[in-house]
Length: 165
Image (cartoon, rainbow, N blue to C red):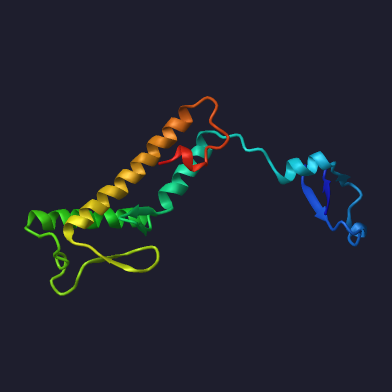
């Protein structure tokens, strides 16, 4: 590819390197040097609070693993998990016993759908533990992000798993 820049507005245009599009290149475009092309193709991202927050949010929404099973954890999923955990706790207070999968509906075992679309049966105690684990995961990510944002400078590899629980 051949890269050209419009000096009037900074826009970058790419054309085939074989010369087949040379006739279509406007006269006002300036050829870019190899360092300019590399800088354009590989922009340097300077980490800041917003980029750390974006990585935190991506991880919060990327799923939560509980008992070696991965579950979805987008905002609506977290709301549903918290609601189910509350119902599970109310069932426990009302006497739901461990192993009772019909704590929510006497005609149907309670199950949660994992990210692989499998059904994971859960008694009330397991649903409460599931809700607690999901909340703890989100909180751990929030605190990890806070630690990163407090660093000066924020590490360039802030997206590396080593910074995140």
